[in-house]
Image (cartoon, rainbow, N blue to C red; front, top):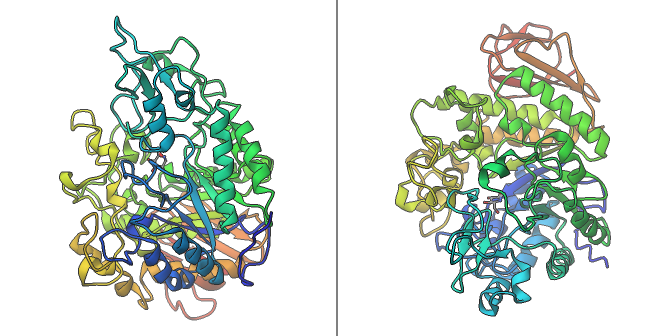
Length: 567
Ligand code: NOJ
């Protein structure tokens, strides 16, 4: 089976993904082509020239499937269709072809840990009743207590609130996320068959790869006697935990790999697996499994030279053992945008800049130094784009967008906000809506050019200054920095290796060289540092020092900044 639809611009290079710059589109918030306030495929098609100019290699599309949007589309009703508010299958094909013609690959999101409660299987399971074949596709249990009136266990869902919900006939089902997201039972043969069908369905339509949601959650072994939440929290995540990162999950991905390899070039996959260590991440990235896995290590780190260095070294060593390439991420649709994160004041009790709570912290205005945050974010991004491996970018970060904190509670959509109360929420945890606000394309106009009829989440007035229109052609803008760096990267990217420049590196400075004399220098501190000779390729801020233009003159790199030199 080989339906390679790629235009001539895309050679059938099986290694295309190894050092790709992948741009995540959150479809509902990217561009609205139909004027209903919700982003859609027509909007994406209309912005392909923008993506091409940006210089990315692939798009990762977050879920666009029919969904009630209980969790922004990660509650899927039908894995082999397009939500009518977002488009049609014909438009999907048109988009895939247009992206390929523009030299851009396409990765789609697969959500195999849970379906939505509107999925035909779950509806069937509800109707069929206890003990039925249909219920075996999910995780149903009898309750505790005299009449089964208590949940089978006191577990809390990831979004807060109970992880078990009772159905009409008295049984309970497990949902590790929202109530509307019943967990599938991956011991069931139908579940296996159906996902193989889905992978082929999209691969046949020319999709180049898949991002696998909650990849570490599929295999579960609950046993008869369920542990309590407290007991569960104590269990090691070493491959034997009842819920997370069980060793046998890789049998599923070996099965998927055989499907990926039916295609030319093989379809690729990247695991979203929040596991305990780089060692536990490795099997997800193996060539007999999904092939690549997100590393969130940089995303979770402080903006600090020593932390960045050890993370980079560890990750490169890790990919050496798996044969995969390294991945780097600073922002996505689940976390506070990095321009805001890096401006947060240090907070007591926060491990680094990010603890589990902090991920869902909506980035309130109080005490955030937005200017410093953006300055560091730009420096971090250039550092990232110089690293060997894949860079995963999130829509809007190329504009230097900050988290939007000023969304009224009644307009928030995230179940992580809706399922908690001010009492149970972390002090300022506002959920993830703040990084999902529709993009500003123009300075003015209805929804800053997002569409013609408003936006499904309110955009703040300051979006005008961060719009594509405002930043385009401004050589100092974040957009132009991304464009320049992404184009240069394509040209410069060689072997997947780097050598630390020990002479330049220090307590606050990290310098490394890629093959071909491509030198990255990042200053994490606040004092300027002297730069070596070399052609300046791109910088995250204006360089200092006398006679910057004059060859051989002393140039300095200010604090919180990165420069690429060719020497
Ligand atoms: C991870 C996704 O990135 C997130 O947005 C979603 O809420 C959960 N998985 C559940 O599907």
